[in-house]
Image (cartoon, rainbow, N blue to C red; front, side, top):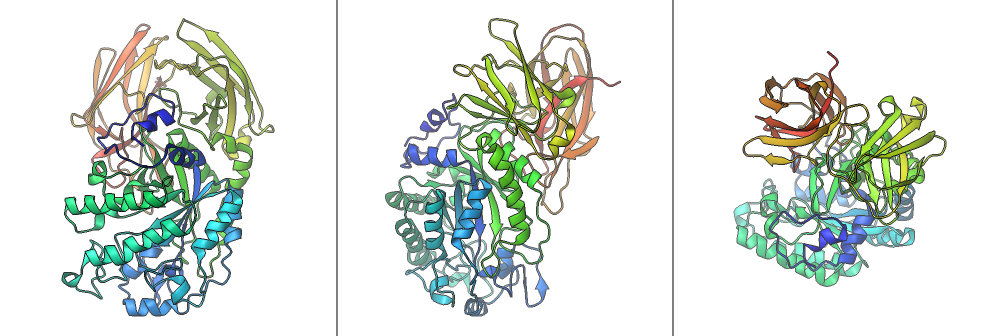
Length: 602
């Protein structure tokens, strides 16, 4: 399938902005099936969940991801393999795990067939270091999960660490097992052919139809670029031979080489989602349910169901799928606190799942400060997702030109929704939703289902809303010159006055120590004939719907006088904004959410 087909699948005018190889063999059916599934479960489980590991080793707790403890502790592989002899997860129940995923509203699964420790969680004939051969458990979890998912109607995919492998002396990478082996004696070609490639072909040919093959750390090999590209594309061709409908994620390679490799979906940062601008390709946001991917016995920090739901909705509204991770313990169980979290998500999905499944990105030219929007074009339905009760209990839309057939809360007990539409020109209709609902109903996000008549018609002009506010973001940014740190928006004003311009951005850095690193950065706002310098400061810290546990930061930039109605341009210069992609660990780019222009309080 040509990469250009992606835009046609979404029935939008999106087109690819990257120069990728147009020889992908993944079927349109497979890619669309993956997209429509929308919400998936990621399961990290392996030997690192052993009762003597699980975040520590020999009485020492390691401040790292649980599955990275063998690397951090530099556990000799001979000792690590001995641990396999007492790894017996006798309470593992694939049927129960698949049922839990189904009840949570998840429609596909990705399971770690082999992580960086080199231990395969299936019966591998290519290498004996696997759960069936090397442990008293002697079962094949991949087969059991594959069959359980099929019974539940859930797509099944596999994670495979194709580059990093601490068991193999030949897996020469940037994260090599240097405490056991001499990298100068390693033969990467031998590892690649005899273990990595052999096991991936086993997985692709032995477990029925796979929804996806999920890779990680693809840029950690030490090959030349030409060697890397040749081996990676050869691998993809072999996998597609067995699984023509299976999608492959971008982490099969490094970000710098993505344009040379034939992947299907983009995987962004761990736990840190993409910005508001809708991508011209499919992408997947990934998040943990606590602070680790694999099971960590020291991790007592589960997320709240409300936060997970907000993140799920935000990702779907920005065009992504959401893959939520859990880690199974040494007995193969889902931790109780994680089951409780998923039960809360499942309760919400039971009432509101149609706002997620088979839905696409917000079709409006820009977002909203009251929440986010998803869209199902097949049912002609918009879903307005409200983390909180909107200001003055109003939703004002100056862009939806279709007649609204109905508007209601998906949870009928929430309240009532009134609709008022007024055609103000040949191209613009104003739509107002009036909400009658108590604030306490929004302890969990609420959803308004809006059915419209005919083919969706959106006016992309940016207008003041009913409260005379303007919302500007990456989606409606008129011009973005990243290198020049120059950004421009246009908007319509009907009511002149004095207005405050504020920037909403998001903290970054490691999730255990979130920080906002942009204090004192200087820039200039130009609008309505005025030019005002600003210095970024944290005026307010609020919850983020997109990033958990990071917070949003509100910074006042300028106060402008707009003297008459008309079309205005706002120029922002001097700071670099994350229009196209988030920057989780850098300090140069401001992780941009929005600019708001509101009537001045002064």
